Image (cartoon, rainbow, N blue to C red):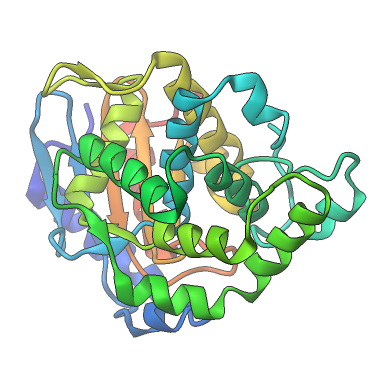
Length: 309
């Protein structure tokens, strides 16, 4: 059985925190550079509503790339699967998450998967709603339902910081527009995308979202089926194959659960049928994943045989 003791979890956090010294916080988004690189916290949310935790779990973090899983789930619920995957592929890539290289060699020029930035921009483009505000509110409503908190919102400071520094994402969006993969104003899309990435919550809420994915879209605490099981399955598959950037293969071997990371240092894990995990450790390794967060998951995977493989 996975850890059910806060005290036991505290010991794992103490051991894993040492790995933070080998990472550094994201500096290309100025607002994220303010984070304490030594921070590490975790919450594990179970289907019976209980939670174990360690560290400052109430501290709010922005989702960043973790939001890609949530937006994908919503788009798959609102649109035909065939329509979505006619614009974005299903294959992993060994390139960095912000790379444009594969787009230049693919024909048609569609992103390989929804977890890289180019693919996530396409998914965000497909969100339904009136303009930036309407689509953002739709995504926020869905996120609030999954997190069971109607107060979840986005950080205006982080969103503005990202918007002002999103040069690579603009380049990707203009490339996609040139090839008619997206068909909207690039600045509006970047505005929406940066606000999506700046959605913020604490580790407990992140773990609860992970639990909904782990339970095939069901929130067993409320009894509500928030998303169809097929949508949850598709999202978890992408989390396994592409969720940890171009370190996803290594992560699958060492930890072996669906997970998605973000450059804020967040990691959302979904142990199928067991629990959701929310982690925050802002010091990143060279692949853009939380250095201490990865170490913490490796320790838990070894101790409790988490791997689904």
